[in-house]
Amino acid sequence: MSAMTHDNAQDVTRRTIGGFGLALVSAVSFALSGPIGRGLLDAGWSPAAAVAARVLVGGAALVPPALVVLRGRWPVLRRSLPVVLLYGLVPVAGTQFAYFTAIRYLPVGIALLVEFTSPIAVVVWLWLRHAQRPTGLTVAGALLGMTGLVLVLDLGAGTLSGIGIAWALLAMLGAATYFVLSARVDAELPGVVLAAAGLLVGGVGLLVTGAVGLLPLATSAADVALGGVTMAWWVPMLTLGLVTAALSYATGIGAARRLGARLASFCGLTELVAALVLAWLLLAEVPRPMQIAGAVLVLAGVAAVRLGERVPGEELTSPVA
Picture 1 (cartoon, rainbow, N blue to C red):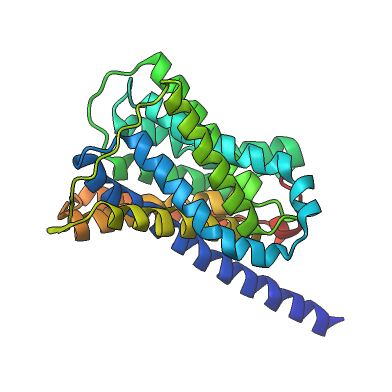
Picture 2 (picture 1 turned 135 degrees about the vertical axis):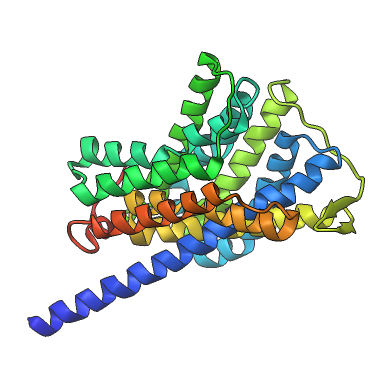
């Protein structure tokens, strides 16, 4: 019995370490979208067009591995169609649409701050829906993480708009839905299949919003300057699709299924830490001391949330949807 318990503990440890590794890859991949996307925007692309192309390229790139993993089990995909549609329309397309609408009324930093409070929504959802009451360490980690988030974003004075806040809150709910759906350990659908189908559905959804005039879709064939190097537009576009969409979403789903929605959502805050470092390396934007202090608080918050998990591996077996 003790040997079995020891083996189970080792399995949980390996699964958790693997989950943190995937979460780190996902956060860095997501963070790359900012510096790379900046080049496309400066070359004449609209934000919505860049995001739509990014998720469509990412979804297409994941189709081959998804078909291999699915092994022709099409009934599984058909049964999971509601989850796929929800994933594509809410976390992928819905979050992007709400965010871009929010920044029409709010400073970017404020909109990001509201959206990145999604871990709090995940904690509340798991508490109300599944009676997973947060521990004191989890609450402390949340406070540390949110404080660090404010410092990293280095918010300046800006006019608050009720409409903008409402759209930012919708973006936050979309981001929280991403972690909750990604952590579905009882789902039959393999993670890479969910990522591929969800990205394609989300991309089509964004194209529809552009076609009806809700979001501007403007593209450009002009060369893109990035990190002092000029390149053809398709180079950063492929990088956006393959790295910041295909890799980030696939590893993000894998991380959430290993860590659970709660811990994975707080690990997602490290995206801002990675964005600081990448902006420094690629755009020569040196972080200010306050931002560095915020990054440290974000990491401390993630560590506290991990310690606050009452039973190691608890969320690996509990339902989250």
